[in-house]
Image (cartoon, rainbow, N blue to C red; front, side):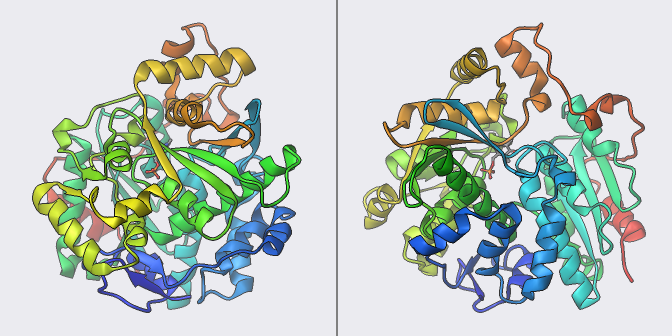
Length: 478
Ligand SMILES: *Cc1c(COP(=O)(O)O)cnc(C)c1O
């Protein structure tokens, strides 16, 4: 399987190149040249597989240049009971009639990003080993992604991680999750500024081509194709498991509700449906930052200025624009790079595009995605209701999906709500929703994490020279 760019600037590159590059020089995103289309017989076979077998079955259809035996090893190394604390990897829990949670938060950082990043870290390392090369991952984060990237990089032979974080602007738990990693290959850099300041520094350092090439800078951000691919697997796993519990045949539809930020997780669901996994309707949920909800209702994609982003209890969904959305529009626009170039040129210049009066919007309406947005009161009511009925506590991100799932629930079609984070990461919100006396039981490895020794360096915002110097001194090379 070869890959191409949404902007038309790359054709026929290998899976491995898509991993290492992340995106193309012209900011295009990698797309497989074609997609499998599973038959009922394929689905029957897949339904009896465990997580690792299913991952191999699906991923091998997208990966041409890693021998099957090696791919199997990478999968077995990434999805273990030891790392995810459960053989199921992504367990299913029933919360009411025909309604289930797909629990995606059992990885090392307690959010769904681990499912993709554990595999991406191993795959990165494997490809570098084959090429006898190394990579220095440079990234900025406001929370979830950073710790997942750190966990994906540590103990990998050919990777180092430099992670910029806004000092004092993350929760004590999130800060501890990153700064308490003492591995010699992981460097936490605390910047006295905002997340945007951190991102601007990473961007500026990366735009220096000489520097970038000399120190083999690499990225693991959400547009990396491997992340989307790895996420397709758990949609399939979840659907099959719900069919089994509801005694349904393998072609019976299950709907899914997904909280969204960068459109990565929803996109994986969309591709799962495209390749024949029986997903009926995909319910996309946003919080008050409802850029995508507006698009799916009105056909207008209007990105926001940074200062117009609303800070919410579901911070990983507080976005200005959705970086993976381009892949969806590419599909909707019959894979025409010209359309993508034109639309994103307009976004760059005017901060919006409007396809409401084009045939493309008909394709959007027929694509199986419906949308909704939620406000804090609705999320907290959902957290309370589910807790009162089942004793299960969902986190505020998951609550976005649960609210929208309620709006679109179809009689007789089971609903799979994607639970993207563990509630223990958002203790303050949970206490506000459920009452101060609620006790959130932390898994063993997170007890007292705030009090552990920390390792990080400080840097002034905007001081790109110091950043480059630091990377140069601590970079990995053979
Ligand atoms: C990143 C994240 C999201 C949003 O996922 P996208 O793939 O960016 O849409 C939702 N919930 C949690 C907990 C996250 O960490």
